[in-house]
Image (cartoon, rainbow over all chains, first blue to last red; front, side, top):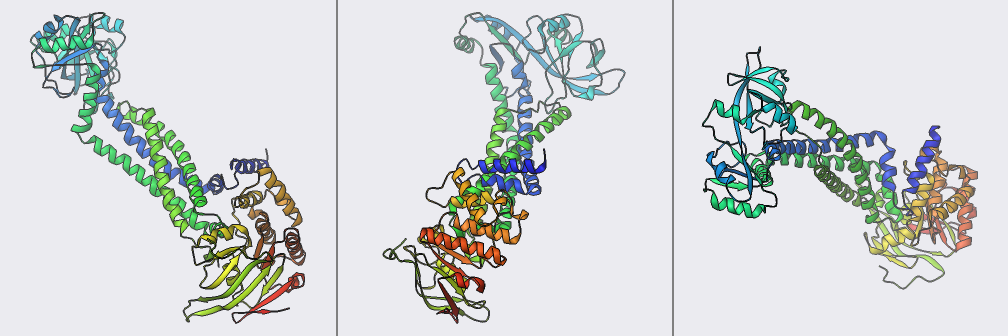
Amino acid sequence: MSPSIVRRALDRFRDLTGAGRPDRGLGLAFVSFHRGRLAAATGGIAMAVLVMFVELGLLQAILGSQSALAGLIDGDLVIMNAARTNLHEWTRIPRIRLAQAGAVSGVAGAMGVYESGMLLRNPPERAVHRIIAFAMDGQTQPLKVGDPQRVRAALSRPNAVLFDRLSRDIYGPIAPGRTIELDGRPFNVAGFARIGPDIVMDGAVVLSEGAWLSADPKAQPVMGVLRLAPGADRQAVRARLEAALPSDVAVMTPREIYWREVGFTFSSVPIGIIFGAGVATGAFIGAIICYQILFNEVVDLKKELSTLRAMGFGPGFFRRLILEEAYLLAAAGFLMGLVAALITYRFLAGATGLAVQMHVGAALFVALATGAMTHLGGLFAARHLASFEPAELY
Amino acid sequence: MSTAPAIADEASVRVRGVSYTYESEGGPKRVLDNVDLTLKRGEFTVLTGHSGAGKTTLLTLIGAIRGLQEGAINVLGLELGGPGGAAQQDVRRKVGFIFQDHNLFAALTVFRTLWLATGLMENPPSREKALETARNLLAQLGIEQHLHSRPRQMSTGQKQRVAVARALINSPRLILGDEPTASLDHQSSQLVIGLIRRHLEATGASALIVTHDDRIFGMADRVLRLQDGRLLRAA
C-alpha cells in the first residue's frame, strides 16, 4: 500500500471522527500531526503513569506480602493472643486454649500454628540466614501451603521440612532430598511449600508439629485455627467462644485478620504516606507535562487559533479542542505507561520476591488520575488560549 | 447585544463617526478620523490607500476583530460596542473574512478546513453536503484537485484561494477581504474576484475589499480611498 493511500485513508478517518459535527474531532488531527511532539508527549505522560503504577504496585505488594499469612489460613475462625496487634508479632497463646476452644459446641477441630525465626544453613555453605519457620499438624493442615496430599506425606516423615519455593535466592540451591540445618539441627527437605517472602523475611520453611514440639516440648502456638462442625453458625460459635475463653484470647475470622493486617501495615509504618506521596508526585508531574505540551501547541498555533477566534469560534470550542487533545494524550500515555508498568512489575517481582501484580482497581485508579491530570493541564492551557485577541493578528 | 434598531434593508454596514488611535513610542497616532461609511446590499466596494492609512484597521473594526474606540458601527443589524461586546462573536460568525495571510492549519486538509468553517453556521450542513459545496467552491477557484491536500502541499496562491473558499463556504451576508489577491497572479485574481461578485449577485451580500491591486478596481461598484484618516471617494 503506497504512503499516499495510507495518508488519504487516515485523512478520511480524521474527517470522519468529527462524528457528523464539523467542529469536533480536531484534537486527533492536531495531536497526530506532529509525530515527534506526539511521541514526546505520550512518553512524558507515560512516565508519570509508570511512576504512579510502580508506587501503587509496590504498596499493594507490601500490603499483600505482610498479610499473606491470613490468606493461608484454612479454617473458619482463629484464636490469637488478645494483645497481638499484627501477624508479625509472635505473641503466643497457651496451648490449653486449643483444647478449650475445641470443647466449645460447634467447633469441630482446633489446630495450632507455630511460628518462629530460625537460622538456616545450607551445607556445605557456612553462612547462616534467618528464615521464618512455621509448624503445623500435617494431617489437618491449618495452613494451605501446597498440595494437601504432598504436604501430608512430606510432614509425616521424621525431621522433614518443606522449603518455600518463593523464598529469595539468598539460601542457595535447595531441593527435595537435600539436608539443611535449622538452628543447628539437620532436616531433610521433603518438598516445597508456597508462601512468599515479605519486606523483612526472605523465606520460610514448614515443619510438622511433632518435630517442633520434640525440639521444644513447652512451645506455645501463635494462633489456633478452628474448623466448625457442618451446619454450625459461625457467629453463634464465635459468641460462645468469646464467652468460654479467657480474655487473653481474641476470636477473629481470617478475613478480619487480613484487613487488620492491611490497616496495621498502612498506618503503623509510614508506607501509606510514602507511596501516596509518590502517586501524587506522578500525577503532578503528569499534569505539568500535559500543560507544557498543550501550552507549546497553543503558542505554536497562535496565529491559526487567533484566526479561528476572528472567524467567530467561541471559548467553548477552544476548551473542547484543547481537552480533546488532552484526553487523547492521556489515553495514549496511559496505554504506554500500562505496558511499561507490566514489564516493570515483572522485573520488580523477580528482584524483590514480592507479589508485584497489576490489579484492576489500581489500573482504574491510575486511569482516572491520568484523565484528571491531563484535564487539569488542558484547562490551564485553554485559559492561556482564551487570552488571545484576534486583533493581534495585525 | 444589539441595542439599535435593525439596519435598514438596503444597508449591510453603517459606520458612523468612527475614529481610531494607536499608541506608539512616538506618541498617539490617529489612523481613522470620524469615518462614515455605508455598504449597501449587493454592493462590491474596494477600499484603497497608502500603507498605514488605516484600511485594515477599518476592516477589522467592521469585522469585530478589533474593539471600537469612538463612534458606532452596525453590521448586519448588530450594533458593535467596545472590546468583548456580546455582539462581537455574532458578527464574526456572520462575516466571511479573508485574511491577508491564509492562516491555514498545517494539520488540516483543505476539506477539513472548509468543513470546520461550516461549524459556525446555525445549522451546519452534513459532511456530504459540505463536501459537495467545498468541491464546487474549489472548482470555481481552480483548485478542486486539492480537496484533500494539506497546506504544505500547495503554493501560496493556492493556499490563499483556500482562505477565500473558507470565507465563502457559509454564504456570508458580508465579505471582508484584506488584500485577498496579493499573492495571486492575474488569472487567479480574476477567478477570486469573479467568484465574490457571483456570490454577491446570487445572495445580495455585500463586500468590502481592502487592496492595493488596481487590476480589480474596475470590477468594483465603488472604490474608496483612505487618506489622512478620512474616507474619500476615489472613483
